[in-house]
Length: 408
Image (cartoon, rainbow, N blue to C red; front, side, top):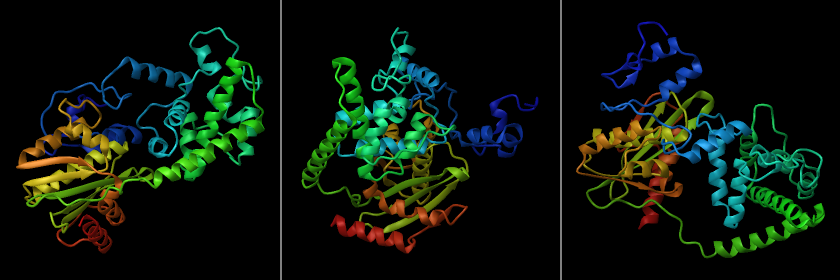
């Protein structure tokens, strides 16, 4: 770096609260520049702080440090800037929403993290044991071997019609699993999860009881479990409560729904905001593009900040901000100071709150946030901020009218 830019402060346009983009791009590589430009700059002077990026809270703990070390040792990426981050988050969202017993979902979560006592993991913890696979005794028992290349597991999965691709050179175990998971149907995901759980169950049975079921017995066991789980899911589904929906705010208050989407290939994202009154009528809407992206949480926080800013600019005094970004909403609502990567955006939002008589931040699921979600298609058409005042795209109007009908 040249002598004229020895401090981070030299890279910031302090009056505009933004980075000197041309300077950053000149001094750093493309990848480094993108990461720097994505960092939000607070609108108020705040002391510098150290953030522990290996944990979403931003604070160091022995547990997160241990996981970071284990991930580095065993090839599991914990970097939030991973190329596969969106796919990994999607995997976990799908996992916890599936109608399967909690113990099986927790077991599969442990498989994804490699938090299981395979022979390789036990050996890495300085246990003097035979590292050969318990089921086949042909190779060392890593998580990849146990569920993919072990002949026993291969026969089980093939017998169930589960055809899995090989791990590529640029993937680790979790990245591979996430890329596979997104291509599967809901039933196929459940089948894969139950199959992995059953394989691990059979491994434990042989190791601790000395008995081993055949591949066909294991297939029959998995098939029986799947039929039972499907039958239970049907019975539970019949007792489901009505789905969440958009609800109008009280009289004299407006509600702003926000959403965001990422185009990782173009390093861009779009925030979408739809503002409605107590009668459900659209008072305004906005799509706002961002050129630099690091992760979903950052984009969602930026979208929330834009929603608050738009309401302020339009002169609304009593506001409800609503979105399906649970983590962002929780961070804004908590009393303790936030130490995560989005702390600067949270600080800006709290600063903007001073412009309102009342403002609350609520979480709603995707079904209650549909209008903002639909606006995404319009946002992709513009490379600049687009604002509609009492005049929005027809498809958004249709969704808004449907929300009104369902709320009455």
